[in-house]
Amino acid sequence: MRVTDTSDLWWKTAVFYNLDVETYLDWNDDGVGDLEGLAHRLDHLAELGVTCLWLAPFYPSPQRDNGYDISDYFGVDPRYGHLGDFVEVVRTAKDRGMRVIVDLVVNHTSDQHPWFRAARSDRDSRYRDFYTWRDEVPADQPANMFPDVEDGVWSFDDEAGQYFRHSFYSHQPDLATDRQEVRDEIAKVIGFWLQLGIDGFRVDAVPHLIDTDDGAEHGFLQALRGYVARRSGSGMMLGEVNLPYDEMVAFFGEDDGDELTMQFDFVANQALYLSLARQDARPLAAALSTRPTLARGNQWGNFVRNHDELTLDQLSDDERDEVFEAFAPLESQRIHGRGIVRRLPPMLDGDPRRIRMVYSLMFSTPGAPVLFYGEEIGMGENPSVSGRGAVRTPMQWTDEAGGGFSRAEADDLVAPLAVEGWAPEHVNVSRQRHEPDSMLRFVQSLVRHYRASPEIGWGELTLLDSGHDCVLAHAVVSSTGTLVAVHNFAPDGRSVDLDLSGLLGPDAGEAGAVGEAAGAAAGHAAGAAAPRLVDLLAERSVPEALAGDAHHRIELEGYGFRWLRVLRAGEKRLV
Ligand code: NOJ
Image (cartoon, rainbow, N blue to C red; front, side, top):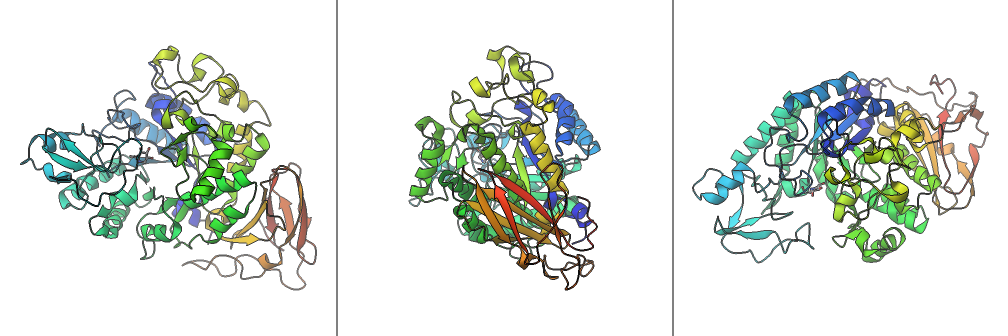
């Protein structure tokens, strides 16, 4: 790769940040976050080093699924502002060097969407066929995504006199996305938001979206991506596909990655929690070692937590129980029989060493990091809020009542704030801005090092032998450089002896691309000066020559971690 490729395929090295306007900052003090509030916090995000905002659904909605139940695809919920405010946010984000992507939720609408209202009230309406109807419940019914809430995927609608299909809640009827009329409407939705200046979409529930009676229809996903690319040169799609790796591959597109641009890595995410529970790096290493190789334009989205439950559905029953036992001992902390409704810091009892180790790992794993708002300050959840709402509490800006989120009365807030040790009094942006050793400063430094290390987004992963089950040692190698990272999952220290000889050959790094200068990085040629290593996260660290046998010893503390940049002879990189 050339370093300038990072602005072409920008998502490969982007730092994503997901927030919900509703819970970010309430500028008019009515208790609900708004676009004007977000506009006032774009500088916080730019200062953190975020390069792409992912805005959770902000469209008009009855709000029965946190906005993922949309009743108008072309508007803004008036509680947050209006389209003009949206455009102001996008423009200002761009001014601060940040792109914006928005949620594309077109597997289903709200039952309050005018299409469904027309469809249910009139069999002859052109919108009837926008949804799927049956007189009887089909015998082979797939499982509903919320099995503890819904009996299945078919519900009877009294007004329509038929059953309709819904993969999620019964107030979210599935769109019949195999019909051309529906696809044409989806295209208008995509075209509309791209025209307003966004750079792409986080695509909701992709396997359901392209699911038909005859199996997954990848041609549709391919057509969507092609359309996005024609409307916007930089447009991308980051898809939610929680499936095993071998099934995810098809969603990138078997034809040179021409479907989803990126996918969240749910497999590594679930393995990460098993590794944390066992204090053993091997489950994560095993997952990463089976990660499929991607086409040049594709990327993994690495994440620690998101706005949903921490789903553990890809672990075996015994493994899931281990994670439940370690991190969600109470039944109230679990949901849908598969997930945990907590944020990371409370799961790790607030241990800063362990929390930081996890984020260091996320930022150094090949791919692009996706932060969930509040992670940069180590926010916790509010266990008294039921279900997934526990992790969707307002952003904590200051130690004031209302956490600096809003001056409205506590009862009028759109969601309760975190409480006790996780309350804004203890965890807030304002305080952490002034503390040199705060979580905020730490995450900021990870972002800075990630952005200065394009090999993490572009390079190839090599798992190294650390000599300890609890220590994950890996390298990412690209023609721009090599980074070695070491992470200790155990509470006690380890002495790690790394053999780096395999990383130093002249051919190490990803395959060449069109326009790439051959042999960009100098190799470890015989007679050349020895490569040097520099400890990126340490203060006052100076490059150290690598021993002749290319072995390097690291004394890792409990939950310790290191990022080592390998500087080859003649390398011009700044350290
Ligand atoms: C996935 C979203 O992340 C989740 O919050 C939502 O409930 C479902 N899709 C249904 O839209």
